[in-house]
Image (tube, rainbow, N blue to C red; front, side, top):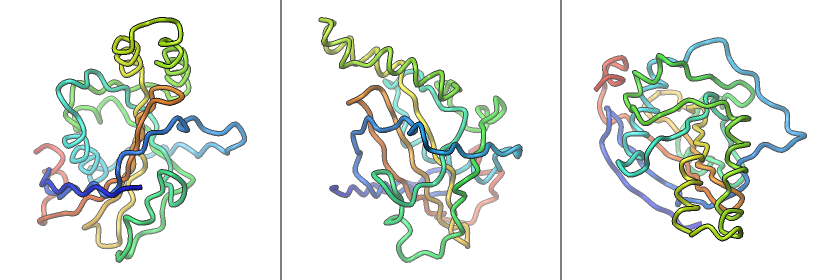
Length: 204
């Protein structure tokens, strides 16, 4: 995998995109894989600040509505979206592997992007399969139209935020899944570039 490094100052964080985008159709959870528990606790202001900083880098004007999974994904330390390399040289907290969080409608206001639309991952996964660009192209639908429709029905998932023990570094992964051979994902390292009040960072 080729590496990619982009540095940008966002909401009190410097965003380092350390992994190249990885095309993948392996988003769907294996049938025999145990689903993580969904926490009753809300996402913290600090977690939302990290998501906001990343989304400000990721979202573009031409992306349209982004179907954000209402549930985060567990931290992956191995596999194609594993983030073990991001944590080299840092003392990390224990990764929250078996518990995830659910975004709430109020969280969208803190994230600050009107293009986000919360979806249930199981339901949206069915829509992804129904609107797979590969299937549409085989039926004779023009490529651009098929891909555009696939993107509009894609599922975007954010992982749990993994902090180092100083909370000056945070790692998060994302997956954009739009079909069997359509999608991408990456891991992102965010570095606090100055000491900020976390509640202020959320609304900057």
